[in-house]
Image 1 (cartoon, rainbow, N blue to C red):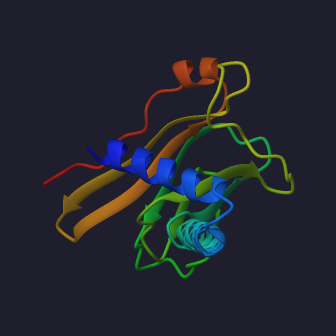
Image 2: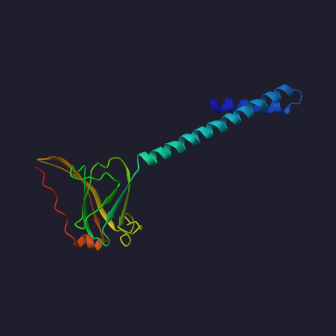
Image 3: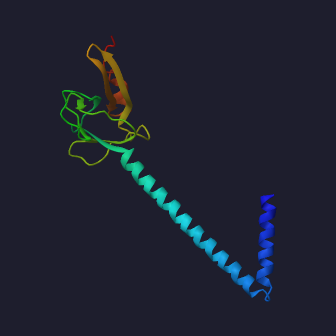
Length: 176
């Protein structure tokens, strides 16, 4: 029904534009077309602005950047305690100690863009892709409760696939 009405409208428009005796009718249709074209352009620009602003805010608010720096040449399991009361740093750059531990005074919530790298090296360690190039494995969030309350930590392995297979898993905290 709607398609038929649109087709009739276009036919009547074409008839008015083709008839030279309807000068005012032609002029009116051209004004209507110009106004519709301008409105369509304004609507498209409005939608584009909304999409750009939404994407910009989403990337800066939802995807928080987190950088985890390991000691140069480190290979093994890493544990980053979150919401650690003894930890002073709330910086998004987490420095891992030589024993594979680190802490963060706040929790990491929502979506993050995590970058893994060695100290003093700007090259990122690959956490995706093929076994030959990947260096970050088994990323997970660990949660447990003990006598002191609830705890959260990030855990992952740094190294090659062969090193991951030959290294024993870390001892998980006991849940009481």
